[in-house]
Image 1: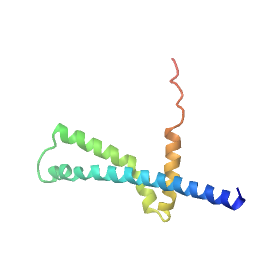
Image 2 (image 1 turned 60 degrees about the vertical axis):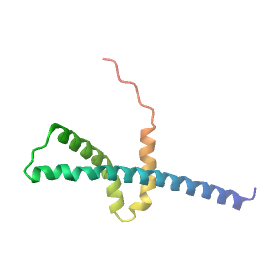
Image 3 (image 1 turned 120 degrees about the vertical axis):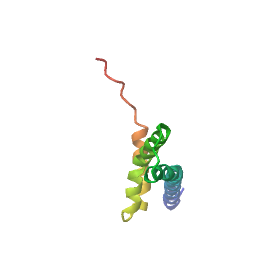
Length: 107
């Protein structure tokens, strides 16, 4: 295979890999933001003079926990050039998720 074809093939595979990674992370972000829409009616209960139930408090904790995990994504989207850095950041997070965990130490 000629060197130019090898380089082109490698570049194409790399591009498709980053595009797929970006698409996956985009879908994850969209899904999480769609689930967070339900928090507004619960937050407005307190403002409208109603009390939060235990179920409301549980749902608020879940929503805020989900949103706190999204904050690195949102920072990347807001900063200049953030969209270009998102695939690299996603790769870095994926690398940390797939690392082998050490067993807990026996005491």
